[in-house]
Length: 427
Ligand code: ATP
Image (cartoon, rainbow, N blue to C red; front, side, top):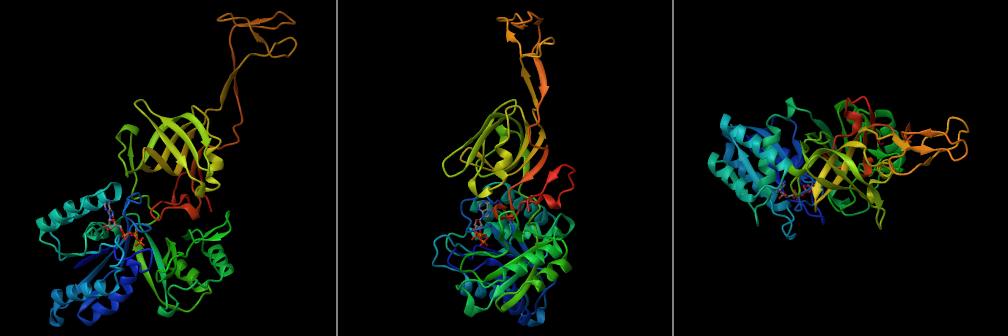
């Protein structure tokens, strides 16, 4: 049976992932044995309802009928969610879905539903209809929005093993420390990163001199180590010196996969969607108050404003150098008619400039001889018809660029995980 859970946390505490180690123990007592790693899934990072990173979890358990089977397991899950979810927060609307041995149709529908939740806004009724159609057991609390993430977590977990996936090892805090300042030895984190990168990634932001593996709120997470290689992830974790921890849980995740992005044309983009779009720079970058940069790209049919906000730090140094005519693919989320950049692929730099020609006799730049009359050298009286086309050094290389780890979305694929030849990972 698959158990999907979402929306139990608030900025004032809790983290939905915390339910995984708690339920691991709780369910064992009633015959529900975890048969795969717990899944931590990230959904569309643009949606307005999220607390932080739009995460949900899914557990796959085997049931033992002697111990009460399905009913007891379901009851225990609900009891855990009810005792841990932050119901006082108006934005916390938990949802739980149980899917027992889904048939082919149910599998197909669950996968399609989770695809939608990765790419766009999904309505609660779409989730309710799916639950009703397939007779899934589900539990809604408050406005019930959590069932969207709960269903999607199951839909993604169904075949994540066969798709691009990564891992995260989360270290949880002891109860007495939750809410207090986190004690993590930063030097040990930089060392752990040096030893295990690139098999682990997004542990530190070297350029900005920050560790990025720890959240800052009152939730029970001390830190999380992400990567592609389980042994290296554990190695990194064992190198980190910190306050005593309560326990560690390894998740299989869709983090770092770009699972949220679809390739569309500019006119196909919809509010809150996440996309890759192709275009040509049509307005040069302009800096706004606060250090945010805005520019525009266009394709055959439409133009769109693109942004690189202040937290994207050194990524803006690349954006600042864009010029009209550069051919790019932009990756990011579309909100308020603006594409917020996560990555950019500079495919073809417009590195040609047209200038008045140089006089072949005296070497001086020639002057226009009037409209459509070519160019003339005042001194030597030489005449040349055509402008000169020169190649300039733009101080910028073609290829893929990304925001730094400190500004990275959980689901964004770090360039270090990509095979592209022309890439410039930010670290
Ligand atoms: P954390 O990262 O700390 O776990 P969070 O950012 O995951 O917090 P949630 O508390 O899970 O935030 O809130 C996200 C809410 O949005 C959930 O109720 C979830 O069901 C819902 N949701 C997720 N994806 C979509 C979507 N594509 N469309 C509409 N609602 C969604």
